[in-house]
Length: 410
Image (cartoon, rainbow, N blue to C red; front, side, top):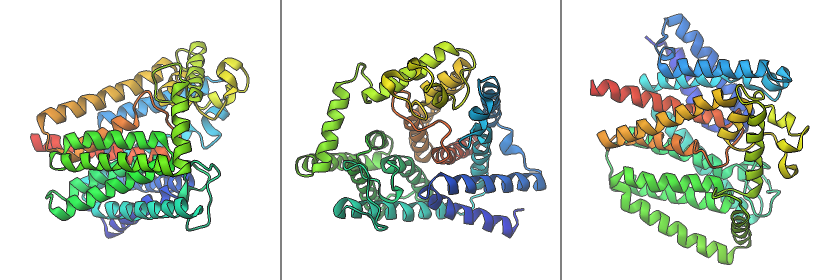
């Protein structure tokens, strides 16, 4: 039996979590830390350990131990594990995954999370549109890059990424809650999708827009009731994009930058030459530390010491790709876990798609995770305290839905 205090605590968290995402990593990190501590206390008090006893959590624990072991054997364990809000605290994300699975299994007001996300997302889009039209947002923030739109995120160029992480979650929750597809629901989802894509386009965030377009295309194949509507959305987006590129200076500059970056590529990847240099730097790190890697977060340290880790003098905090970062910092052992996870997501998606195509919520959250972890696109830092809670929320929903439908099948 869950006490009223616990229920209210969980509800408050569900309301605050989407708000925390737009304030930066500190509040988000603080929220899931407090929530994780309370959830562990709750499990201990009520002797509920089922959510820590599945294969996913056990493998996550092994992966976490590999991170710690790699850091301890690195040249500088402090900078590797503790500095920059380091990976030593990475375990809280796995606890958050288990807690999300618990919340959804108890049906603790899932609508609250959806409505909270929708409220925040519409505010973010309106704020960004104000900045696009007037040059500054509702709080007087101006973007420091003329060709990019940042809105509420200030100097952080993550607007498109934010939408690419939160929109699929909203779609998943939407289909979990509303099973009927009346005209109102269809109209709302179509308008919401179109606004998301437009804001992502004018933000100039190419990777965020790419992920959203891929999600919309595949979502159209999955949800047959919306197939034609999603096709219309993409046609409208394409038409508006042409107009903006031809009549808006910022959109035109960003489009030309994209064409130039892709044409200067040495490979087939849809990334800039600068990203290629970063990926290769991560691979060079692997060549010198092949088994356990150089240690988590050590690229940012070592790229200052050798030109082979900073090709063309490109040296940042991370190599902007999970797989190249992992193979460089955690070696083949760490990369093996990441690849196995991705193969598992592919297997889960295909199995569900060919066995139960009406399982829309599970297919959509699975699709979102597949797109977020695509191997050959740019990513944030693997240990980013803003992205990881969002992915953890998605994984928690994924595990709940998978367990839920497995029980249903039995």
